[in-house]
Every structure is written in C-alpha cells, then in structure tokens.
Length: 329
Image (cartoon, rainbow, N blue to C red):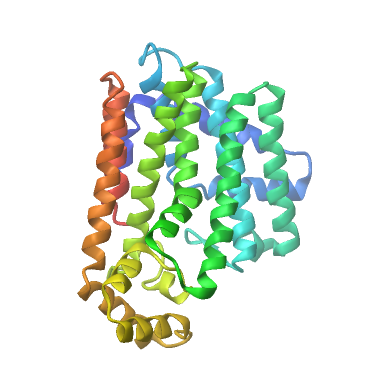
C-alpha cells in the first residue's frame, strides 16, 4: 500500500532520488570502520521529511516553481541531515539508548567512544560541505538550529529536576528542540533559491510553526493506546513535562497537583503510577487543550504559506503539514 508521503513527494520526486545518491556520496570515507557505520546510518534513514521540507520550500519560494533547483538546495538538505544525524548519534549516547526507530543505535553496536567520534565526524563533514562551497548563509541558518537544539535539551534537563515547567518554558523548549530544525529546513530551502531576507525569514517562521505543531502531536502519542513510535507513557517515565500534563496541573487543586507530581517523580517501575497520571490528564481536558494548541500552530503555518504564490509545491507543503499532525506514529 502506498504511503501518504509518496503522493506528497510527487513534485520533488526527481530531487529526492538525486538527493539520496548525493547524500550517500557525502557519507563515504576511506576509513573502513567509519565507512561501515556510515552505510548503516544511510540504510536506516527514516521518512526523509527534512529534505522534503527543504525541496518543497525551495520550489514554493522560487521565481519559477517548476524550474530546476539550484545545487545549493541539495547541499543545504545534506548539511541539515549531516548535522542532525550527528546530534541524534550523540543523543543516544547521552540517553544511553540502545534503539532508534526500531534499529540498534550506533552506541549499542559500536559502544559510546566510537559513537561520539562518529557524531563528531558527521559534524565535520557538514561543516566541510558548506565551507567548500562558500555556503555561509546556509551554514548560518543550520548552525543556529544546532545551537538551539542543544540549549533546548539542556533547558529541559534543568527543568526536569524540579518539574516546575510553565507553558511558556515548555514552548521555549520545543521551539528550540524540535521547531528550530524544521525552521532551518524551510529557511534553507528559501535561501537556496536566492530569496530575499524577508522571504527567508517568512519561510523560517512557517517552518517553526509546523515544528511546534509536530512536537505537540508527538507529545500526544504518550497518552494514546497504541504502541507507536515510543512506548505509552515514556515521557512521564522520563519525567518530561509536556503540554497535556502542564495544562492538567494548572487546573488541579493543590492536593491533586502534589499527588500527581509525586507520581511523576517516583514512577520508576510503577506502571500504575504512570497510568494514574495518564488518567488524570485525560480527565482534566489536557489532551483536548493540546490538540487545540496544535491546530492553532497548524493554522498559523498555513496562513504564512498562503502568502506564497499557488503552485504544486505549495499544495504538497499543505499536505505535508496535515500529514505531520494527522499521522498515527
């Protein structure tokens, strides 16, 4: 059965196929061990949503949406993939995670030392790709995302200790941790076709809104009943305060709040405590509130997108946004 992303990819099918080849080439190395690991990384790549955002935005922002894309669009997409993959490899070391998307993580197969060095190598390959081609404007955009990603992670770790996250802090965290990356994809797409600073900023803001909606959708999976990308209640087990729980706690009495926070802090090995938190959030309207907030970000993203001229790429971007918030995993 065809995946919904297949039809969304249609206006950029040729670019995606070409990108696959170019990305594989950018990962090649003469060091045998490294080449083996790079091959493993390429094989387990996911749905390639990030390059799709780059190419579809490039077409949407281009003077001729049906024309041939600039080589800078391909380098920008590769730069994002290289730097993002580096952060994921390092994340798995930090989180002591043995799996990513159902595959063994690099640290699980080759141990932490090699995983850290592989992450460093990917970072340097990304920098090399940008510098060799004088893509300073693209490097500036992607570097901002990588910096914000690290800051967002550290802010979340700092707040997880006290569980004192307000809605504003939560939005700051997800803007940095998730939205900044999609914002870099859309900004790079626009910049690669020579769009003005104003248009690049508009594209960046569009991507940021999509990223916010995407992350809230991810947070909602924690309260579902299906075994999806992550096990049920994993955020609660990891003491991550997400929007449904933050909202529910805001509505709670002092006593309920204290009890729920105790259950979040002391849930290790207690499935019933995690379930108690999930039930509390559902009853308090936390899920409905998160869905409404996600839809608001989606609508704001669509409003910005509609400022661009109509084209097949713009229509595909609309479908991609709707896919990100309607997906089942």
